[in-house]
Image (cartoon, rainbow, N blue to C red; front, side, top):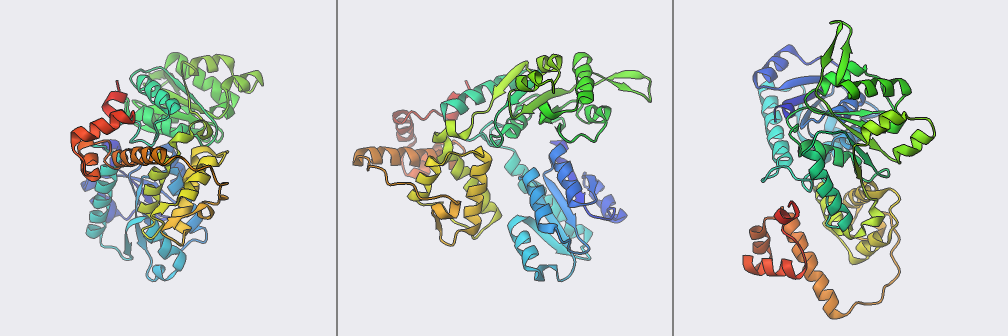
Length: 429
């Protein structure tokens, strides 16, 4: 994973020559960003596992700008170099505790700083590289509903091919995760993954196509792409070439296009905001990401997944959710889809005053009492939930999950068959 060895260096000043030389000796590719806003833009374009933030003073907008960076790339590990006395500021101290792998005080020793960056890279790499190779589940597509199972099956087939992919779905459903899973599960996984917001285009087309050569170019909000860009993209897709003015010739570029759209692209075509001929080229392999309201059976697994994320960022947060909280989650309509669920769970982990979060901690009303299930039905559901949770914790390693539950491997297989929980290896067939 050579591309993951990039270091995003966030500082208003250039990287000191001595530190940059030492980083390059240790095989870091240093990419500068003069501000957190610039860092956010870069994190949306490419994936980084490690970022180094160096502050000479404390910017007024530090917290919101940094949180925007975390939203752009949640799995990046941050190391900070801070001015003396910076941790006396409560907001900054809380930021470091929640989000930073390590921190140093000016003047930072370059050798120690490189060690911190190496350890941060090791931790991020372990999290980014599953034990048995990349899978769609490891990349955030969590759940066992029929709709999500079908999406994963289609995604794996699409990842094995090369044609353009059009990913449609409501805001917050996880279209970006589908795009990243397509790249990570494909033969292009070691190439660049470049994400471009079609609604905010500043780069020149040839620069974008060149930076994505050998990898995947993700076009977010593709329906909002300006018409002149649509013409350039159409030409590139038709010929897989980019006009290079300096060389006076066409230079072949091997790029796979993945387009993301919140609404049906046909609607933008009908409104004459999008070229029909380009829509035909993009819509070769269509993937639809279902809204959360159509796969509510995935909510418990998603809550467990987002809770684990939140706990990594806030060691003192809630350690679980009450039955009333889970009932409120299941009855909510989820207009913001999976992103809304993630935000509510993270907020509960951060702000809950008790170890078990309730509906109010999620910003939800307690649901109306439901008729009690029979004792046998409750026992069966509890058994199934325990098995599913143990499998999630063990990354579907059946031996580890069986050991956690205190049963034999054969008993674990029998219980999985009883509750129709398929081993992950079967789902891949």
